[in-house]
Length: 330
Image (cartoon, rainbow, N blue to C red; front, side, top):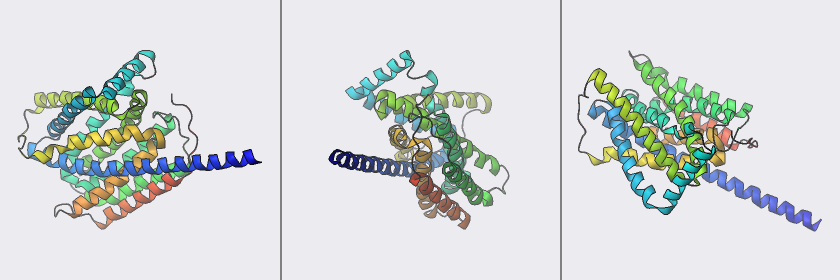
């Protein structure tokens, strides 16, 4: 009986510790989402000044890559993590496509530069939510992330559907203009890509035993992808109409992206792709509403506020649901 009592107390403490780690992971995801909202505003403003969202995104991503190269290659833990990633690729612990999360990241930052100016940060973010919810649900169901396969429960489906409903409510008043549907569809697709990116970066981070090598791999792939797309644009449409401004703070989006990707690589393994995705978009909504409320051009409408509140309710619903043991990652 005494031994059973000790085991019971140990299990309780272990459960409490897991609960605290989960709560911290969700909080970190929310803060990362606030960073994404600020990143969207910066990339949108830079894209408007340059006259090309892809060129603006390439400039900020390349700056982040330079910083990451200095940090990761300069630290012993960073170099060790890169060696572990290389070893995992050689032995089959990682597949080559696990390192392609940066392609999704390139699509996401490009959509910021293209769509934010037309939609405002709040509606852009709510559109991202729908894609992230659906993509995260699929990624967890297929076991793309490092935490393995998470069964598609009614609570998870309900949370994702509430987020999709929030997109419809928040964005319906912006769909009247010509071409605006494209601006809403692009972040929806980018949201799906973000979910895939989080899952793949989480796998690389688990193999590297550190978030920073995974973040570096993501930025290398994203920079190359954006550079290829920009070259195609230059051939087809010619040079952008604007030029890179001299305002330093506009280029901070790449630095913010470093923190966001690092948090994703670290947190996804603890809470799964769906919980991370919904928590991060909750942070995006809070940040986006604050940013849009502070400007005259894109004041949030009542529909946008309702959509934001629905999304936050979905995050709470899914995050509080009892975790179902995941199967081993594929």
